[in-house]
Image (cartoon, rainbow, N blue to C red; front, side, top):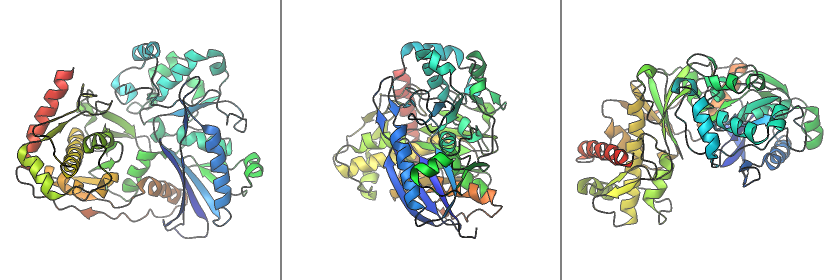
Length: 474
């Protein structure tokens, strides 16, 4: 892409919020970041939208002093949204009720009612997950907690679309965000899930617009309040993991499974046979930017890594020698060490290390990296989609992680992307689309499999032991 106008990407993650600036060639020029603060209540753990909105307005104004921003694209995680009223400029940032933190404990009576109304796996696009995950469950909780205020609301908006609305006053829904386990949208049948009509929510959910469509320019009230220029055009925006996936699709890639790594390992593939999906595992049906289904499999591997590596781990890389010893002696970490079952139903909170215990920090680190690779391959096997496996994200900082994955799947071509900001680049590809320009070049590197004696037998034994450990917990 050519031209003078710069592009801003607002990336709203669970832990941090980033504002990026890029030129039209995809070069990232500047980044500002702030914690995504959460308050304990009342009435529930909720996100601090007021502090975040002031940070966004002030930071955007400062950036505009030296970067002429032409477009802004919001992206956000898939586990929340905001119930809004008419005025996006009021003291509550338009929120009729506080935005629920998806890790907040959901009351048992709400959970019980929700389980009776949330429909089938196909309706939801996933199992019912932990705590207050899923927009539909959050809406039910709000409706039960304060029905009078709830009845006055105008819209429910996913995270990216909320910030687009706050900036422009235009309310829309978007496929990838609604299809990211909101439990409001049936991706396969392309209509609202049954709970929407059961609870009378249809009027809260705006019409769909493409992720690359123009919502409008920043509202005059915000321009005056923060000193913003008048010509920033805001796009609809998208779900964050789907934005990352989109950069591969936009580049013309086909027949692949993408595994993005971080706190969550998220595998996605358009080639998955959804008719044979194992609904009892951590599987999902997501939507791409056109609303078409994408198979997903996930596990909270980042939490597993931290628990296994232990408090003495301070970023040291895994070494080959300790890894070989771990495999030789049959030391295994059996999931799950967190509060999510992932790929092993019933395993949450039942993680354990079996066999000879790791004796050093180096051995614990090697075991943690090996566990991450095993969980990655489990997610990819669950999807069974595509002739190539592509890795990106945080785990690539560990030099042995990708070679281990390649060695564990010798029949599949394994590649990696060293792009550290795939969500942002995917959002920039949306800007390229609206401008009618070519997407950015996708650079992939082949991965050489690690040579670890006995690794294949170890992996088979680990899988059997992990299944048995989960089964005993049920």
